[in-house]
Image (spheres, rainbow, N blue to C red):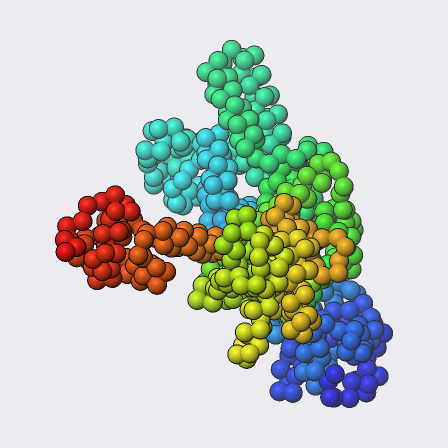
Length: 607
């Protein structure tokens, strides 16, 4: 709780709409907020610490001075808050940031206006449309316009005086039919302006109005038997239909609405905005927000909507959102809709899909540049999914291998910070188990592993994974209890058939989403333990098989067999080695016996 006398401050704050400002010990503005009732809102910060989240506690502890401004209406409060945040950029306020500079289509404020695309939004009286999130879609729109309506592309000053004086000559664009030559007065301003009206309708999503206009002109041309003009108009209609099929058409009954959706994690939030006019999505934008005080999605969206609508000067009276929302102070009569079915629901789903994709891509990009961020996020997710009290930075997984009880071995693999730590892998030759007893094998391996860690003063893992169901988990727990550490670690079993996760004492298993990162890490651990265990088991089985075979040779005992295998590694190499090399381990009688056993002649004379 802040050390300054907040009770005295609260006494002078009125029950009126306004803006409040918090300053730290250096009199630096650290937070700006708006309120319908200043006293009630500011008082809510100075409640019991248990009712505040961690970041808000940090803010409150830094407050040393409170200033406030009374305004007449809630709209005035929002405008003032917005201006103060932009001017001072307080540390604990959510800051909006454009994800990149999007392109716009501009109709230039000039005689015979040009239509082109730009990334610079200038307040020069020109008309801007966009921004377009997809550069490809923007070019489709612009190419369609140029195919439908011949327009000039030059930057000449086509004032009436300059055209009348004959200062300019037509260029190649006129010769190939892309321009009608307004520079020489070959196209009148009225005709050019009529084309511009159709272009504006297309950019505003009013494709139906342009289509109707062209159909009327087509009927007039056919009636006048002007078939060349009729063919040109028919071509334009076909191109317009082709363009319309590429645009996102929702429903002709949906007009002038805004759509907002949000996706967030612990540190960032992303807000998607769709503008729909006459059934067509004509504008889309995704913005990034940096969280300051663990704000909820509702709080963040309530901040983003007024800012985005103000930025793009939207006056839509209907706003589609993913959950119930109340935002006081928006200009005009505005209604919020949470659609369940129909075209409006499809619009919301489109927005949700876009914002989810943007969030995924941005976080992946950020994590590539900052691998430690990905590790922390993964460990936090695992802690949450597995209901742990600490981050599982050190995980160990056990697996047993045997064939019908023969050559039983157990393997342990170790992951640290979500990645394999192969230098810490271990395997065990089972010593106390006779026959195929998987539970007893697991019990021995777990006991030996953690008995040794305790004896050597090593740190225990935060998470132990047992490859198997309730039986193997119970066997592992028996050893952990004997060592007195069953409450110091989290231990779970994973059954292979349905990837069930079993907890000690729980009757029912836990099922994680098949795409869950937590489950993928557990599966990786289980598969790595299985691979490591099987490899060790095969090596042990092969070695013991070789020992058994070589011991059948008369005159060669166990000690000699071990020397042979240590020197030549395998029975195959022993068979293929020269007598000279084998003589380094075997005497003459042993060499002759070995060659006789494998039915191979020897070059050494025993006499």
